[in-house]
Image 1 (cartoon, rainbow, N blue to C red):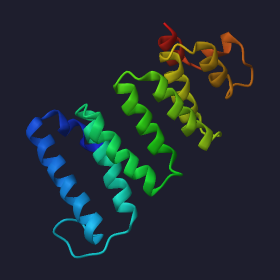
Image 2 (image 1 turned 180 degrees about the vertical axis):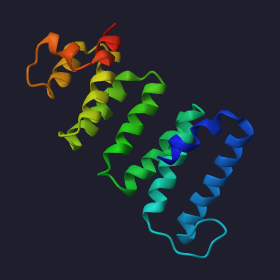
Image 3 (image 1 turned 90 degrees about the vertical axis):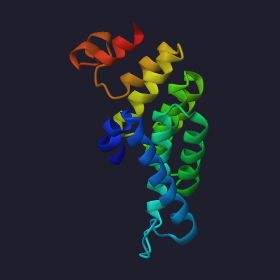
Image 4 (image 1 turned 30 degrees about the horizontal axis):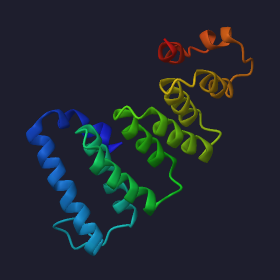
Length: 165
């Protein structure tokens, strides 16, 4: 993702400010004209979605949860069926140590794609942090053929044991 590519740059406050300013300019231009700032070329409406998502992640990095939630909500309003948006929203709440809400949002993401292990595991992780360990264990076992505790070790679910500790 773009966020993964720029995350190391965000550690430098001057680069963070430049990235934030650039993203806000693009966001405003996309909202008004459906163009990137400084361009006349019409963009795909999805650009607005991804700009909102990136702004949410940048503000989450800054621990500015108010703005992070503002932009992730705009992204969700734009494309409410994109699972990743709900996972980012859950992460924002997790960073604020609101594990109850993070767990609830992760559950919504998990239910949007029951065949995907990642949202399932994320939901389990947030349930553990919300002290819902039995519920988390049931989620982890969904993707196991043999749902015994020994199987957790064999399948290298060390993250699960780490979170429970």
